[in-house]
Length: 331
Image (cartoon, rainbow, N blue to C red; front, side, top):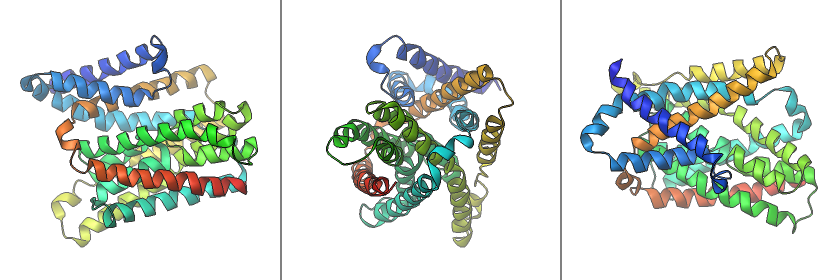
């Protein structure tokens, strides 16, 4: 137990510093706290002596594992099923279509065109298709991905998600879309929830409302996708007779709890003040997990496959924008 305390305290301290800093430094308000936590974790890790790093490892592994899963469960307090009525059946089907397409195309292109392994391809595709850094991190225990692969995928989310956030409001002035249709486009196409909020608010309150709801439904799709990937991963290893790896397959219990939390939130049985607190706790714990991930990552390792991963993410970025626009046009 004592072994995990230093690493946990380090990642918790970084996360607290990041969330405090976002309210003190104006230009940090538009940057995802998850990204800042990772970056600060990397910087601090590379500044520490190796003997200190070894003492932190156990706690950092707990932070990027158990703490991360707990954060994803609590993230469900940001969502209610009733809200999805505003995007309608078309919005639901559009989200399902986009997520399935990006995942399949991403894994196929990553392996065939860029020579990436299945894990890296899936992480990049998941970050683009579902909910950015949170999706990438959620996949990590399911496929036993290495920290540098997770960080590479999250880096692509940051770069191309930010580009989408800045580009869509500009493109809106050039295309014949209503505010509702623009909201669908942003919600279908942009990587991170925070980025969707910024892109939606740049046009109107109604556009932001639809954009966030569409994006949140993509977040909900994380659950069935995790279950499918967990089953696929297990069968893949069984077919290869890799009994040692098979024992490490993680059942995504947090996915079921995530849905359970959404149900509780939808029933409105908890006071709104408590919901706000739990939502903030979820954000903090996600930052703790990302800080730990950053501290466990070495920059030199990211360079292996980094360009290929960004190449894949660039193609998925274009596909998201074009296909998202096509789907939104009929919305």
